Image 1 (cartoon, rainbow, N blue to C red):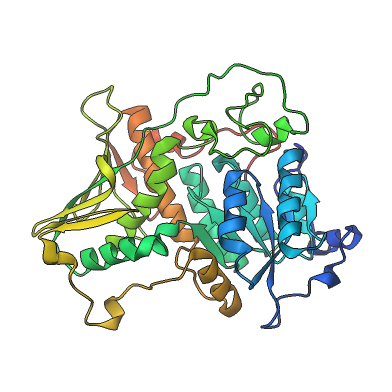
Image 2: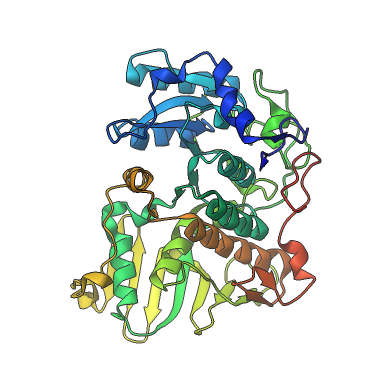
Length: 428
């Protein structure tokens, strides 16, 4: 038996034959899209979530790569999913893209080899677990998880399933490799022993206080909420139509980790990489001294390095012998010569990938480990969650990154949240 997240609040369990057989009755024959088992066949992907991020991934990454074929799109909003089908069909100049209203239906298709998850944060783990159950490879946007417990769960699930998993932390493969160069230099000791890293990103999320508005026609609002608490529709959370902006559900703690997690997942990811902590994390959580401050929380690693929320946009690494400041459009150092260097030993050179999608495709073909695998993404997301806990609870804490627990038993109640009935995770 394999676990699939609950559909429409009713717990379901399908055996493997049911999952794979679900595609038999679908309108588009799988024979139109041969399996990617042969080297010359594209990987058949389905996109879950077709808001602006799903659309950008399609346009900027996946339809440009002949190694992929988008065969299905899914969204709880009818306008968005039909817009997705239109864009896919226009690109391939046919009418073969399938449309689903739930991610379970898309994952169950036997003409889908892999899925791209571009939904709000509170849905990520549910969809990852379902993809793992169906043995579908996954590309999931960051921040990878919504809670600390979810981070631990997705690592375990992906490892059990043996799927190829890529987290959408694209700074490891894009932006002229500025972040790669930074991580190499820090790891090589070019600024000496690291003392502190400042990451300049936005604030923690707040509780959702939006008024109820008239529902958007064609939107399954109950389904959009999913595991989150029931509340009335507001277009700030799920914009009307095929919107062209990033929605502000990111600002509310029922659905996301705020601006701190939104861009923090990117920059904290580079900090983890540069410090060699992809499989670990900090051990102390220190809230700011000012009880009202929204910047200044500190996470401390076992070796004494302090990660501070605040400062210029991007990440600033401060060491005993110099500093490096990096963001998407800039990189600089003091002294200037710190970056005028190349690793002498090839083992010290980090990979220069030509994009996240291309890296994921290569690893799907050879079943290797992508540049930003599940543990990398889960532990970078954990940094965001620990920072938010510092602001929400204003309590100094000892964290055990190996066992995913606090020393303080009260704090362990903050590892997860209570989901709506029918959306419980395994072990709840």
